[in-house]
Length: 65
Image 1: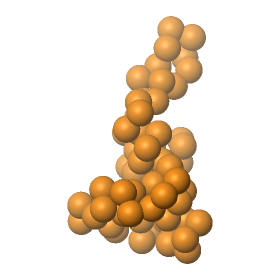
Image 2 (image 1 turned 90 degrees about the vertical axis):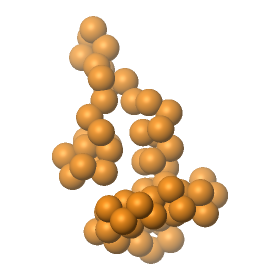
Image 3 (image 1 turned 180 degrees about the horizontal axis):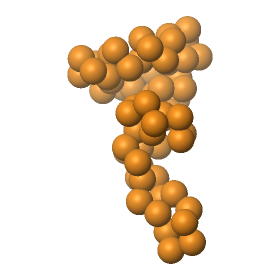
Image 4 (image 1 turned 180 degrees about the vertical axis):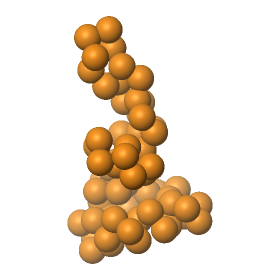
């Protein structure tokens, strides 16, 4: 997940007082969509391209996780 944060595919999450990352449901859902797309053969670059063009929502809703 941290690599997805560095590459801008996921927003950096808030942190608990102990320093643990606190991911939102939306972030977890986005990550599941990214991982599902990878399992279908999409590269991370292709996923990022779809996200840049607003197709991430269509991609994540068309893939059953």
